[in-house]
Image 1 (cartoon, rainbow, N blue to C red):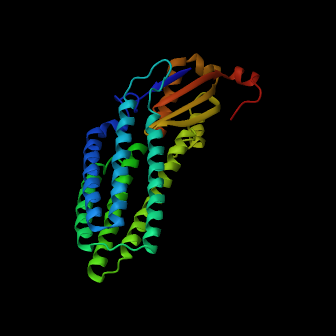
Image 2: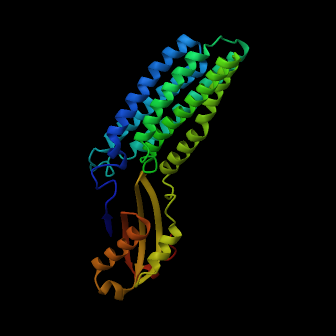
Image 3: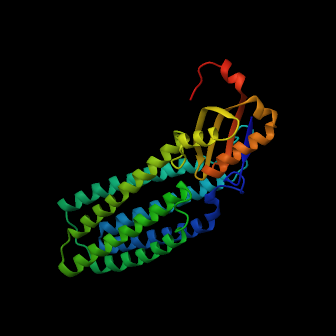
Length: 308
């Protein structure tokens, strides 16, 4: 039995998300500042859209704070009781982010519907100015996280929250302009609904991918059929069974397998054969943490029915 810890999240001093800790701190500060400005602007202008965007900004700050907290926990060293440390906390944080986004959507939708039956006069000019400020601040946040979104579910959740808030600011800007130019007050609750609808697809995508990891499903970029084919192509390999792949946290896929080999292959050196097979898995599929159990051909023939 052997395993390989290559240059993965487990061996580079922490998770991929840890690299972006300072950027997350800046993003939290920006989101918190936007929230305060938008709440004041919403109270002064009477805009539900600004208030909805403020709630979304607050969710950004809370969500990114959760991400940062998860990253901090994930840096703690593994223990005999938690052999993978706290890496999975990042995924739970991503799930919580998605739930928060859904809660904001429900609140925005409910409040907007109420505004149609009981209209409120909104100051379009102030609404527009505050929304422009929010958009500019969100663009800075997006720039900070621009190269992180594809490397971690946790960071992807943070990026999507800031992106959604930026799009929400655009909706508020449009609503403010319509009210300013035409006086049509219904533009405000409509902009609020647009902000809510922007939340749904990204909340769904984040929740879907997080649950995929929690269910220990095969990593989306790892084809176990191809893994089996590559292993069987190695000299001396007779069969591969009990092949499993899953993800501990973003950027940390894991693979295990029982590999049946000929007696002649084992005679040439157990260690050399194991290293060659692990290099095959790491090189072709970027799975640095693999556990392969080598079994002599005779043992395989005596074992009877085996799991695939």
